[in-house]
Length: 497
Ligand SMILES: [Zn+2]
Image (cartoon, rainbow, N blue to C red; front, side, top):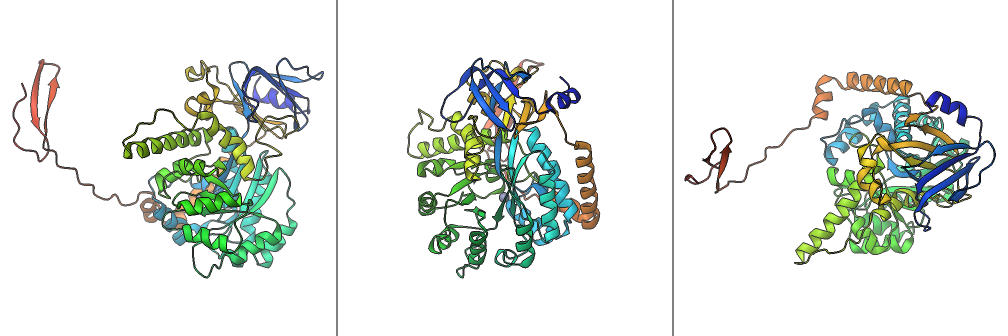
């Protein structure tokens, strides 16, 4: 079925049944081989084997594939998708200089809109049905309106985490513009609102006013915590001492923190949003799941920003499992021990990408698992053309270490088919790309060619090579003999043969 006929077949609200797939409900009921998932209206009606379905139900052949809940990204700066890949070689300091100190102010409401739309399409295409837009480029309320309009224009579940990296959170959150914006906005399970700001560890704790605003407005808070050189244990302690550590707070990164801070987060019911590719590359600290697990802090996953990375939670799952195990091995080696059993399993990482995300957004009763009665956010991973998707003997392992976004076959959000047979439905990708191209042209011409190139390609420091005392041989395949060469700066070489 092609995408044109797909939109016709799925467009009339007929029930939909996924047939004969490997179903991962992610609600503790285990793997269902040869399983079906029935969707009626916007809800999951039934999950099981050989389900009886209503007359007229549309059947999607899930054989050879995995049916799972839609994935949830709990922290992404979607507006920055307009400069996708620009910061691939940045450190966190260079990111801060670019967006906070130098160029963040040039982004117009239409640029925020363009980045958000392309980011949402990218997320849906990759099986991410819910995204929290950590939107800290909202320097005016018009920027905020643009961000919200973009999110609501897409057939996805979204949370706008409102922020402004150019303003003080205790000021903008108490301003008339923001208060009016909040009162005008109608939120639902499809479109939520949070506040996004960081706590700098200023002993005067000016962020108190922002936390009070969030409490007054009934909004959850998401905050970059444990970021080397930016936020730290004092940030956590100040939140604790003023009574603002609650289950309504998500701690993004939560990397460079002490045991004491983890205990405070665990005791107050907060959640974490771990962006492993970001932490590994930008320098917030070691990806912390190995520590969070020990404290029972609920984990969710995120990709942070497409100015470096992507909306691909397969990449997040893979990086997170590998980083966690890497740390376990290194810690064991430091004790002279060998890890003989892995503590973290692929299944738990898939749990973090689904239910973990739902929980961190306060949506765990609505989405995150294939449970009858929940809203139907469902992804079919199936690619008959891929050698990597066969056999599927350990489905969680296949998701984490074998699958990629090219294997996302079908995506439902709230019972609506938004991708089928690898084709997006009802989204204008060409228009989204054109809008982003416009933003790239604007940013480049505003910055000027020199700044555009210098910011994208930061100075490369010199790295000294370690002197090597050894000599080594090279094999000359043509003449069949070994020749010896001296290593750089090494002692005098003697032939080895
Ligand atoms: Zn971030």
